[in-house]
Image: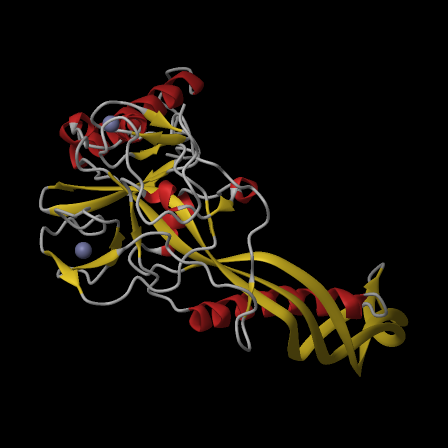
Length: 374
Ligand SMILES: [Zn+2]
Ligand SMILES: [Zn+2]
């Protein structure tokens, strides 16, 4: 082991041969792709700095730690941030080979990162295992190897923290009982009697609820559908460490397509949903039923930070259709849509019918009596 890489070093190079080393998920260090020499990376697990959403930034803003350049995909518009000398031969998000140099800046640097923990070769193996487990995937797709087509990309996420106070108005529903005359038939006779019935009296109410929110995660990417992203979550955010340029070496990072304010609007909507539920529960403390009619939230000490989360992205084309597959770069959890073989589905349906038919025959004692489900 050699000396740890210095913080914010402009460039880093292999101490043995001078080549650019890449982040090595297995050893949690930098490894030279040429001579194999490994260099320790100082990993700082202290809580990341957060920045106020309103007003001027307090303290020093993070920087990327080295010269970055941006490429843009002509196919889907994704902007990818690369390190010095790194290039992309195709787009990780849509597979297009038309990736051109972009003049835009890399933008706000991340404050914290979950470094890749799953080596690329393991991710490919996890993908193969995943597609093999897909019952209806065509055998051709199951044999498909994605080696060389799987790309490790850090996806930008905004995390927000806030101390929120919400004032609400609503209605308290209080139960009361009334006697109502009813006509019933008893022993063949029509009788009139009184019955107790429940009513609800609604009275206007108002109040406030308070909650502290930390790490509300909002994806800064719009390239991958939320449904696909949520299939490979969660990330263990306890493993977040302070950003180092070393974590990105050999991997690319997507440039955030959602800006900090747009992300904050989404976070506020998520906060309001939670606060509405809290207001509902608050009314129920003094009533039998609750209605929340309006809610106004104030966010104190609202802060954000940009975080990078590791993701392996692969897509494969089967019968002219493209399928995205994701592998969580921290946990190895796979997700995606797999092609469905019509022949396999038909076969399964046929087998299913045979089983049900056979069972029906057994239950019916072979007499041919129709079963309830027939
Ligand atoms: Zn070397
Ligand atoms: Zn693309």
